[in-house]
Length: 411
Image 1 (cartoon, one colour):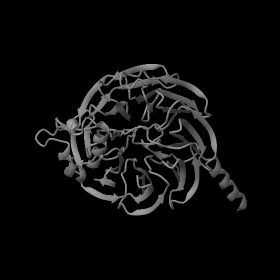
Image 2 (tube, rainbow, N blue to C red):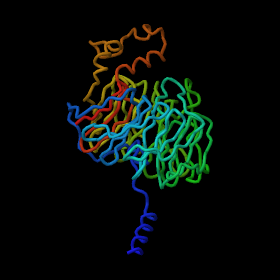
Image 3 (cartoon, rainbow, N blue to C red):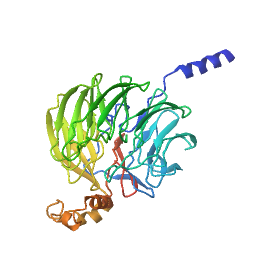
Image 4 (cartoon, rainbow, N blue to C red):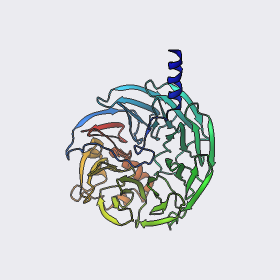
């Protein structure tokens, strides 16, 4: 009996780690889900109020929903009822989304620590200190969200580094220094760690921390550095990522050589996602969702009222995307036809400050009202309960957070 027990233990230690759950659903960050679609007028299954803005994207592990808030707390909720199971208070705002394996969850806080908590209890397992986390500007809403792969946690930092940390004990395995803050969430593909930096480069590192290749974005008139703010997405031999230079890039995964580039006139491209081979991209100032085939051919553009800074969550037929005006949109992936399926109460109450009720467009004199102060105006946009987080789909329920402080579940 003792021999059998020892053999079972050895098998357990040798077995591969369980598939992780994280921002974008998988390590490739595709944000695609095998889930029934929502009706065009879904009901609120439940909502849970935190004491701060929620820009962190929810992640579900089994029956537990995990998400952070600007109130400095990480929340674990029952995904069916929204009942709080536990909460953990860090020393700063939590704008990073979690990655979790079979027993632990990992996230970054503005207090400068990468935390590992036990999923069932919220007990601290370890914490790893970076050189400090910060926002770079008014539109820098998110810290890097970790990815966990083969018992290693990879995460970017405002201190310009990409870190690899042992998931079991929090010990540093390696650190790679870039030339700017790394708020993009790393992607792991083909034994490489992929992440862009505010220095305008996109990096491909080996899982030992060695540089495989790096790609210099083109830059542009208004953003000459070509900062890479958001995570990439990978499929087969291609990696896609967006830049503040208004470009969407497709590179060869192994070499970093360019395959194609798409330029969005007048706007950052925000976050890529995938539904099969269909590439879905949210945009900022042009207020759109875009669809491309694998060759970079634009299939359709879907207009919304205001900026989108989260990834589009997809099923086989529809995509779901939040926007800065507190609306959740359902997009037909074949045609691009879009309907608004949910509007936050804050959006209904505060929307008239910004939008003309007759045209549903921004007031023509809005910038004059703000004396051309873009930063103050975009700060006030958050009063509408902006949906900055990337939605999560699970068994016909759509989960997301809002700057009104609520975490929502729609069905």
